[in-house]
Image (tube, rainbow, N blue to C red; front, side, top):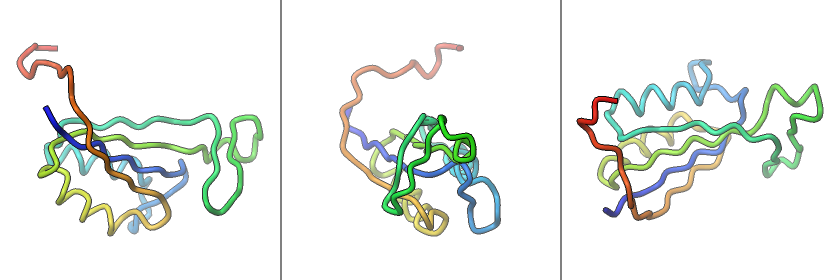
Length: 111
């Protein structure tokens, strides 16, 4: 099955335009729209175009570690979501790429 992977690179402290935690807003909106699933990955280190390194080793920067939100779904399902993202992600990087889904959980597995 062909699909797309959407990746959103953020920081833990990033907020949406209403002041809510951005990665939580993204996850809730993806769920509300019925997307196939979403995962938030927390990195142990990273830096952005601004150049400041964020790492778990430096105590004052460890509360703003890099995050990656990944969503895999059909291209048609992601199109409207990407349009919404353009309004809420003001300081981050959003990428999309074609992927091939090899294994998917059964919808009716009861788990």
